[in-house]
Image (cartoon, rainbow, N blue to C red):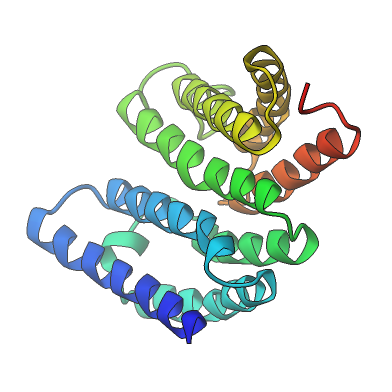
Length: 218
């Protein structure tokens, strides 16, 4: 029952965003990233509501659902972007992979918030400063966007490391920065929306390694 309610809640959220977007007419990229952020925050809370097996199933079910939505242009405020990207497909797939391979609340919540919140903020900041310096001549990511991603990822890491492990503030800041650096690099250079897949899986793996080595909680 909870599984069906969660699936329905996601459907309602996308419909609500579509209706609001048609009323206010914001840029489609902005609407897309707001939806991305809301979906990420919601997904991060899922381990408190349903099992990781159910999260895996939910993510896998959303992949074809999102594909059909993209092909039919059902949610124009979300899918109508000028650049070529399959990020909408990779996002639920990444959630399913993380839930299946890393069934741990700490790792899962960190990874999903990083891709859901930090990545969305990076895109919004990058839009605002899209005429500024880019990381490479052919790249789509701006230096300002990557800085926003790095900053948000560090903040997420500090809060979660302290909350889940009881680490000191200094230790939490140190390891949050250490984790944010490679994740920022991955996010900056992944193309066609693949950051939505690579970043959360890498986040789970990196944090899981650090945690398994007993480096947190001091």
